[in-house]
Length: 176
Figure 1: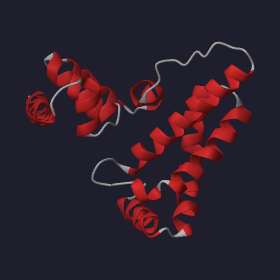
Figure 2: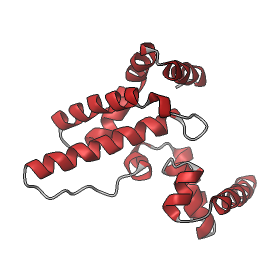
Figure 3: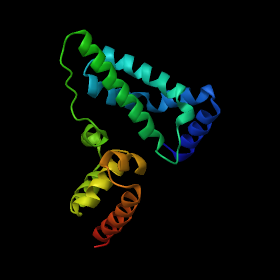
Figure 4: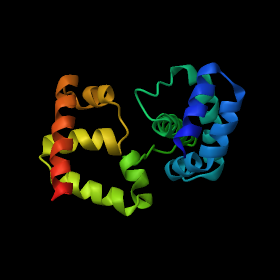
């Protein structure tokens, strides 16, 4: 998606303009449906979760902050969490044990990643583990620095410095 279109969508979202929802649906519904369907493994449940996701997206549009996360990351998290909630609810109603794979951006999207991203993951894997953990959280799991700090129980300042050093080390790998 072009940056101009993404900016237009986020601007419209900020204004509460209905066109934002239409643009979001046109540009993201099939991708989000794919993510949801991989989690639920049930078409009817996936369709319900997709519809519910867009309702949540619209109701929470005022909470989106483009400084904290890319638009797709924000949409993805809402869709993923909605799908997990739907699956849990469905399984509880049907007396099934909830079995949700450890799904995150990294694992769900692995099969769809292009070669450049696969190469990037391999290069990140060569770094010291403390940098790997931070880069994985920020780039492959789509977390913000604050979310990574909370999730990894590492001070925000440390996250920032490890990101900076990790990127510097990664640049050395690419420069060689």
